[in-house]
Image 1 (cartoon, rainbow, N blue to C red):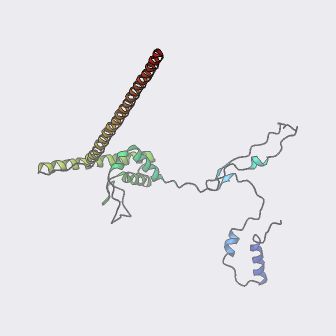
Image 2: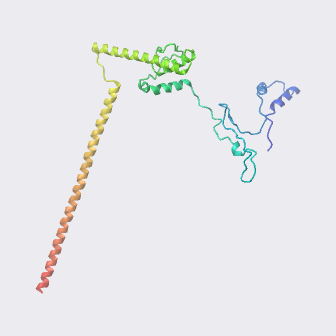
Image 3: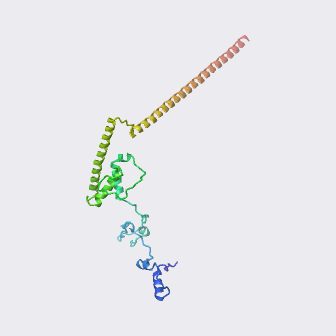
Length: 272
């Protein structure tokens, strides 16, 4: 089948139509196609460079001209298998990777208990343009997101030259603010207790209480199941003992009957 080149020559044909007056007005796409003309080379070649990353996917090795195959011939060209690109995902879009995701993952990996702090999911007012000159933000609790944004701010403003120093500085500021916050909460709780306030169980104590209730219920169920299992074993052994006793009594009765019959037969023989 002949290769169709009508679509490729659309720019040349349109230019000829404009010169001869067949088309009076220039099409809207004319300048775009003229700046980026279509490819006129139809030879299919293997793609060795990933267009997304501009990296080589594979590379053809020079054939060994000194080696001879089993037919006694020299290899002077690449075969189809060598020209084939092994990476079938060459045009797969690359994954989106953000620096803040890496910082966030590292922070919560080093501080897993920060994930146990309660979060407010619903937000009535959102500060879309915060100023990260300071770690604390109005209306936003202190958490790992402050460390992430503070690190990015230090890198953006060139206050730190590399990401390691910026992350360390942000963590140091976070530790200071966290210790200050915990100290203020402790002092406030002691003052409240001094004035007669009574606090209920904490979240951890409440969870331990619920867990202990479940354990006690499981213990009672296990004891009940153990009693039922032992009762079944006793009934089974008792039934087996009764059956053996009945069979032994029946065997004795059969022996007595057989003995009586044999005695009567002997007496009849002697009497005769």
